[in-house]
Image 1 (cartoon, rainbow, N blue to C red):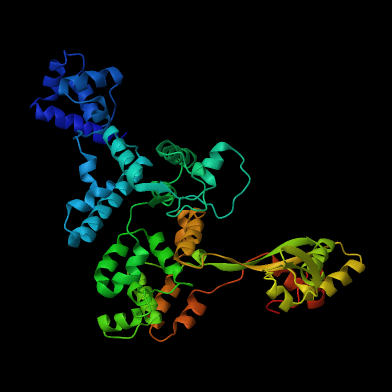
Image 2: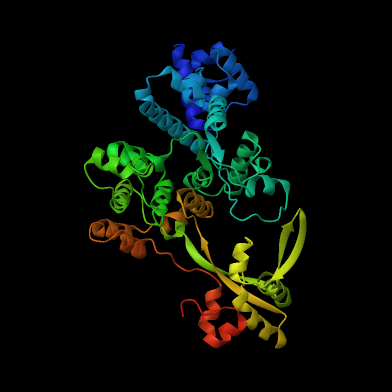
Length: 479
């Protein structure tokens, strides 16, 4: 509640009736002095609930309107935000659909951010609360981390902390998604309660980064296609999104090239592309063009959002692995032979050719037949278990996987940490060097696939021989 705003509203209501403060006092039966009314209108004091009801009745407004310092106007949200209904496209010229949707998205996102910032600050009026509910119900979902499933500690942690909202939700259970508007509001108000001593900008950051605009057009698709047809349109669109969303788009180019749909859609796609644009199809140039556009629109290099390598170590029981290897690569193979409807079975040597003939897949095993002798030697030496390290890429290999990874990193960052992680100097250098470096050189220098992980500690403190003795590897990576 803003006392100054409420006071100004009370003053405006009195002026509408052409009353002085003394005349208002008399109209209310003389129960309030003009000095008392003056304090209300200056925001120095607030009427109690009975006084509010009396003022609301006299001015023909609601108590809620007085408290929020504004008159409510009935708004048809279905008409204002008409793209909530997928049938809206049938009522417009097909050539105008893109621009109409762009205007609607800008209206929705701008209003949503206004309401969310007010929600985490002074709070929403009754009318604003209804508008917020409509926008969230029809256009937004909460994005929450589902990269690593952990043990469920409680129902609310399970519902609100362990599953991501995804456009394609094939690998995420519907029952595990946030329970709807009530859970979304609970999460926001819970956050406000725990962060009451932070600034409004910090509270807004914590709330806003959890929301995904579910009906937004695919910006990545626009970068791939519209950058050729109408770069200014793409530029305007990217300029309107949040800084962290721009940074995520830039981080996506760590591994992913910009690919024009026309060129890759068919065997003759590149020929069609060349005929349309008068130049050869060059993904490297398109990707560098996208990097430049994103930076000019405000994106910054942010290593926190990039994918990286780490090493995970798995523990194996040696005798179990020996049994697996023997069964797969050494035990004789059983061959069924059918003669006159009766099967006879014969054994043959376990060779790669015989496995191929019997269509026995080698599979992607952790150990193969070349490991048998070394494992056997370790078993006879008294070892029962071995550790085997694996290089693991943390981050996506396509635009969607990269988005998920980068968005998860944002979830774990404070507003201050986010701004500190944006690299202004490297971004300026990249823009200056963009035309002089190949895409491969750009990625190695500005989008490095770095190593982060616990395993590196052993590599720094052990000799190569000690390292091989502790871990089962055929050679030491990066030695």
